[in-house]
Image 1 (tube, protein in one colour):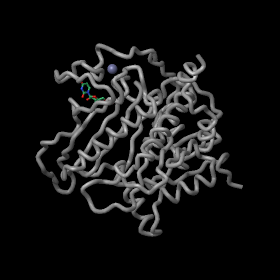
Image 2 (cartoon, rainbow, N blue to C red):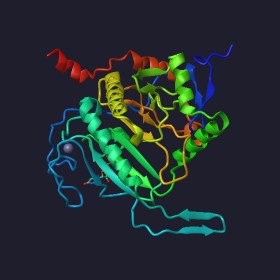
Image 3 (cartoon, protein in one colour):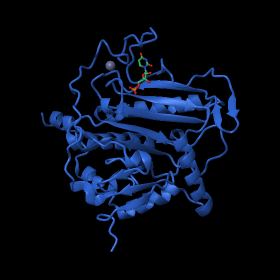
Image 4 (tube, rainbow, N blue to C red):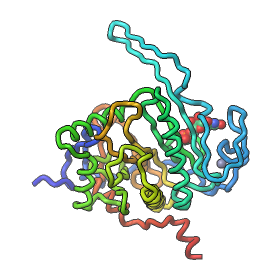
Length: 351
Ligand code: H2U
Ligand code: ZN
């Protein structure tokens, strides 16, 4: 009898149409590979050398204002530039290129250098969400922008350049690869069934419960059935929304609440500031209608079995197919079992 928790199998990623290989029997193999070292986690509230701290100088010579909540500026080393001329190259259908125009911004989540998302108050996270909304609105008012990617790279292991709590926004004139895939798959489902793919998916997850991590009135956090990264999760809105501008005030607070709790659970897993790349996926802008689109946020953390053992996407995964050992259900159970109060806040509550 085929058992998902014992036998090697492949699972379909509903959002991208890709398949992943799961090898649940493999978790017992001994580990003799690379062990990462951890950067120290005791930071001051203000670092005179940090380009994100209030009042400090940035690479382009400008001085940050003495801001109180969150702060946004155009990336001084933007990957996309607004004044890129329009153009295309096609040599014998073999060498193809298209110019790409866009805007990159950096958002500081707090003036306090020592904090991270799970250590901000719910009100503090609401301020960050409001800034994400404001930026989304502002960037989408430009007709040359078609997609706005809001994301956070956290931790040295993820190539993050600075521990000051911050994220980025890249707005582009064409649809990036992941968005092309997710639009295609959601559209297919919408056209076939007349319902949102993710609404149906979370209904099923709420019934089965084994991959749920957190739930509140408006959002669900879960380890998707097709997760590739060991502790990969997704936050999905219960309401079928296309983008962050459609959040009600209640949804904004509920999103801040689930963000704080999910990232606190992550930190509690190995009692470290847990690294990840996270970001929201939302409908394209200045485009045809996208009724199929359902807002969600992905968390892709690289850590595997401890604070220092990282999963590498190499070998078979680079050449053939992404693969994981521990099952999504096992990871969800571990995350569920952890406190939603951050270990550092627990200490301060006990005092
Ligand atoms: P990370 O989120 O990956 O750490 O990137 C931070 C961004 O901040 C990075 O894209 C930008 C870098 O270009 N940056 C500035 O815009 N100004 C600076 O003074 C330093 C870094
Ligand atoms: Zn700082």
